[in-house]
Amino acid sequence: MLETLMNLVQQHSGQAVINNPAIPTSQNDSVLQTVAGSILSGLGQQAQGGGLGNLLGMVVNGANVQQSPVTQGVQQHVEQSLMEKLGISPQVAMSVASAIVPVVLSKLMHKAADPTDSSVDGNSILGAATGKQGVDWMGMAGSAMADGKLDMNDLLRVAGQQGGSGSTGGGLGGMLGGLFGGK
Image (cartoon, rainbow, N blue to C red; front, side, top):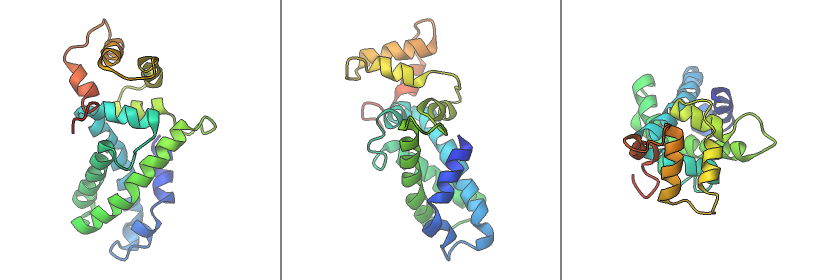
């Protein structure tokens, strides 16, 4: 997953990083690595911080990646990482993150939806973001939306399956928060 993410960052960082006079050439590799790692950790922050529902919707539907609260949160995380780890100015960090993050996440979701591309799939994205590898996230999403719509009963059933022993208390808000218009 990280290798695929790094490749996407390298492919789509030309103007924002490589050809950016505000970033010294000697720092290009560090910037690219920081961006890729921060996108991955930013997805994790979103999943853990109540945005799992939005992330799941992004992976399943692939739509509205540009406007997603997940994308906005990841972009802010990348900006912070660039400023803190590499001392990049806020303006440059913001321009790099806003140029790369939406494009890379859109391409990543497209690759996940492409059955002919085995480099990444929805389960690997959600597994990396949640730290729960081996969970059939896409199967759960498919069963939750079997009737063509996603409602609270579907979410409660899926959360119970994921949490084990039918328990939906406690972690449900964190697991699915943000799905119904939360920030």
